[in-house]
Length: 118
Image (cartoon, rainbow, N blue to C red; front, side):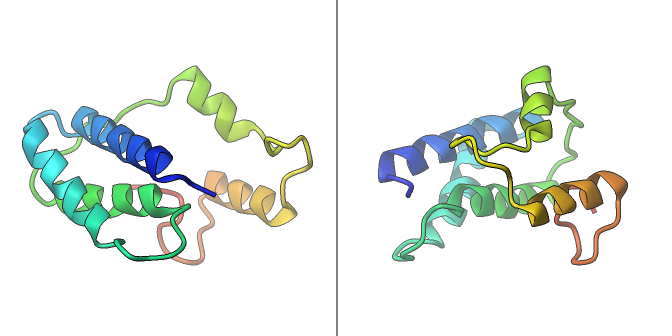
């Protein structure tokens, strides 16, 4: 379960990532877009995925305003993406492993679930 402080910190990381991706936009503008998208989820009971949804919606809006910069993942991000164990040490859900394989192979059935630019 995500706490309010955890969610706010995650949203601040969203702003940082978007500023790296869209260097031609001002910090104030990116922050305003992220805040608008974040407030769309006010009053919703389940908060665990709000930062992910905020980032996706904000990125789509910003892509219409400025060209994005392709960011290469660093070694830590690659290692985290390859990890198939959950934090409690148990095996990952087999569907998650399959989904990751489908994303890497480019076999997406339900639109852009892999986070690729359209």
